[in-house]
Length: 402
Image: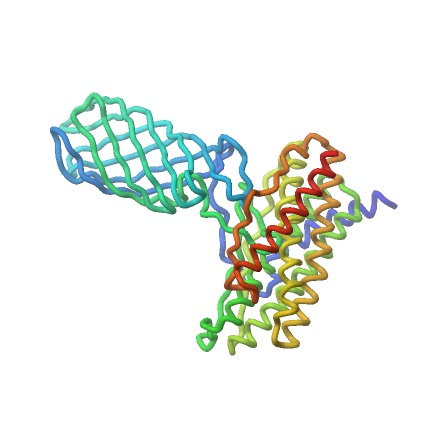
């Protein structure tokens, strides 16, 4: 009988996960970012500058790169990222000289997402006037968000250039944001947000409409996130109770989505429609890697994020001005607290399977407070709640580590 329940839970999780784009009653448009196994960031860019030396003129072109982080950093963490990887660049000088550069790049962020330095070392082949020449290449890049300033030097040629460029993705990963609650994550761990569309009559300038629109997007993304969790728990042979609780959490998040969308529509004066992130099953991992991913996401997205979402909703109850808001916040606070408890139970089960995974868990030094516009609370009040959640998390982490 237990085996039949496990199989039923697994099939239920798989079927509901496949249907998840329908649950928010809209067509999803977001696509999974392209990725290369072994690398945390894959991107490309364009650049334009001026070449100095024996040959002068406009230097422009395109480039592609991949970055592997030298140490693992949580998506919601404020820790700076560092890494290295391959780079391929095609550049043209004055429309008459083509250069192909292959290099290894490496560096890191001075401040998360805002400032990074990256160095390059490799080789360049220059094609001009029917011939080819080789050179040793070095480069230096200073990046802020998607924009950068660069310097390229070809050492066996009298040539160097300075200029500006733009990269998508940034060299060291997505610009960080932290969803309120459990975000839906793709194969490379990047969070996927739900979109929102509304009729032209919708008043997007209304603070109340903007607040509930942001919350509806977060809640909508949590629906496929919990379906994904249920399926992966079933595949790992977790207790049926955990699988069924994850499925129930997906249904609860759907209720949160509808409540938030109704309030956004009420305050905005027109109907709000949501576009959930496209659900694609993540590639199969070895059992140890799958347990590691499960433990980290249960800790960061489940215990930390869902716990903070419950705290925010609880604090907003004393600030709300309408009965409709109070009813929605009461529901969200109660059920998000249950989701945080589920995350802790999933984490405990994961650690029983692989006790050494506890070393991969960390409490962030600082939690980004990026939902001030979507909360009734002041930024200082949100920071205080985040600080309290980190303090609770440190005590829980000490208990898990024994």
